[in-house]
Length: 424
Ligand code: PMP
View 1 (cartoon, rainbow, N blue to C red):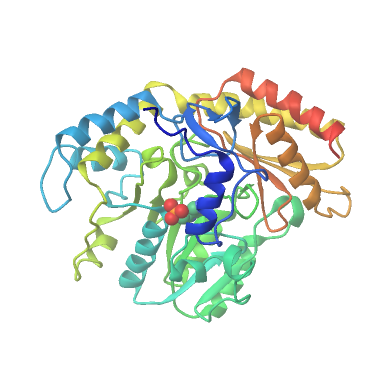
View 2: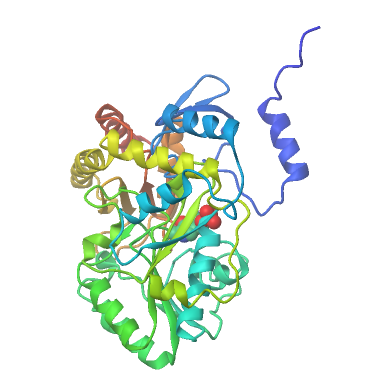
């Protein structure tokens, strides 16, 4: 007897339709039926190879053999929880702490960026006794009830209630492309001064959903000063941009010469295995000791083995150096395209976290939202996966696995040039 053939795309879509909530969308316009991944590539059921320029979770490559092997080995040996003492946990925490400023030595291990941000806010509230929070316009910090309230990207977006809760203070996006010389930190200072007691400022070290925006050089030091003067803590959300993606530093906040009170990490931490963490100082952690903290899966032996393999791979394969070199090459190539195509208003980013902002007119900066969607769909047909984001969805995002090659980048630049010439 032969086994049944695997369900085809139409059948899979029907099953999804029946059993998955409609709140979930499918990426890349025409659905892609992916059967496997290998490093920077995803392979479709029809054999097509796609260059993945958008999945920053598989940081060291889809199904990276070193990470797979580490997880398999540990899964066959022991998996339990952090109420037991086992090899790997303390070593992993120490290894992570060593990547951070010395004072951020206490870690909490959880399973998703949302859980980690939620925990970071609880810790900040416990430490300060204050409740209110400050967030940046356009930010996304997670899918829990509290984090939707802390994510203007969501509460101002489709299905959202539009206005922030009274305990949420929203500061403008420090966008040098659109705002020119505006003093965004001073604007934050005024909002914080009017807010009353605040628990924390939750901010990405480089903005992702808000449009791939590197923070202006003086922004974080001044903003942190205002927040601390008001008694609040500073939480750096490194979920998207951490683990060396910016190339020159392991954590993007380091570029700004600041030390946050709390750092949140996630996505690439387990290369796809669900892992996230919160790191803070012993003093702040001590304010959170009254109620026991326990996460069933957070920091389990398999996660620690996987996380350690990710850190080993970043180091052994020189991926940060690679992000600097390849990111620089990519950005220079995109800047050349900008000279040829007036629709490219801005090219920005650091390392392998880049954004291409499309505008209809460079003077008015009218967002070229439809055009951005057309280019992303067209590039998918050319076997390169990209996506759009930003408040106007006119920013093409580039945040690939860090193992892509110079040839992948050159091919992308060539195809993007063709796409801009032919599809608009
Ligand atoms: N923070 C940022 C900056 C994110 O981009 C995300 C996820 N997109 C989260 C937090 C939430 O992470 P998760 O989806 O793992 O809960």
